[in-house]
Length: 309
Image 1 (cartoon, rainbow, N blue to C red):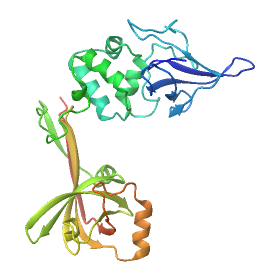
Image 2 (image 1 turned 180 degrees about the vertical axis):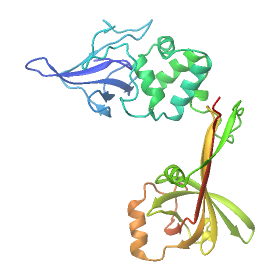
Image 3 (image 1 turned 45 degrees about the vertical axis):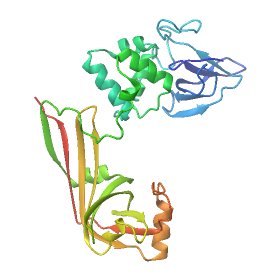
Image 4 (image 1 turned 90 degrees about the vertical axis):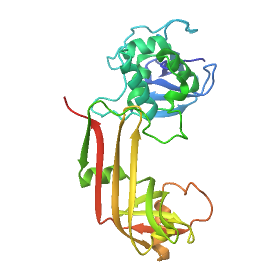
C-alpha cells in the first residue's frame, strides 16, 4: 500500500464492500508512501495516526504531473456528495484557525495572485490538502514543504519562518495599518490558558524583563521559578506581565499587558493544585518548585490590523 498527500483512505466492510469510514491522508511518515498515515476523517474532521488493515484501501486523486500512482480518482463523487476536486479545508460552520506555515503559504500565494487550485497543481498535491494546510494548524511533511516552496518560488526556510534567531517584526509594516484597543474579554481570551509571557521586575541591579512559562488558573497568572532567580523578585510588589504575538507574514500582531500584585504561593495544597493543572514544565529546566501568582488589577491590549478601506 502506497499513498500521497491528499489521497483517500477508505475502510470497507469485508462482507458487503460498503464504505464504513473514509478520510483524507494529510501526513506521511515514510517517503515511499507506505503506512502509517495521518488521516483526517470525513465524519469527525479529526486527524489520527492510522495503520491500515486488510479492510482498507487507497483511492488516489489527482496529484498533477509526475504522479507515480495508478488510476486517479479525478472527479469521482465522495461520500456526502463532495467531489474530489472541491477544496476542503475547515469544516462547515467552523472558523479557520491557520497555523504559522499555513498563513505564510496563503500570504505568498495571494501576493503572487495564485489560486489554491493552481498552487496545488504546481506543487503536485490535492487542492483539499492545501486548503487544510492554509486553514488549520497542520504540520506538513518535508516533502510537502519542498513542493510548496518550489511552486511558490520561495524556500522552506521562509515558509517555516526563517530567521528564528532574529527579532520579529523586521518585515515592512502594513500599507494602511490600524491600531485597535482591545476589550477586557478579548484580552483574557488572548491570554488563553498558558504559554510564554514576560514579567517586569525590579532587582538590585535595576529593572529587568524576563520570559516565563505561565498558566492562567482561576483568573490569576501563575509561573514556576527558583527562589534566587530574577522572576522571583516579582514577589511582594506590583508587576507588569506581557504576552504578544507577531505575525510577520501578515505584518500584524497583538499584545496584552497585565498589571497587578505578585505573591509567592506558600500553601502546599495550592502549590500542588497548580502543579497538577500545569500544561508544561518550565522550558529552562532544573528545579523550579516556587510558584508565583499575579492577580490582575488592570488588563489592557492592542492589536495591529489592516485598516478598512
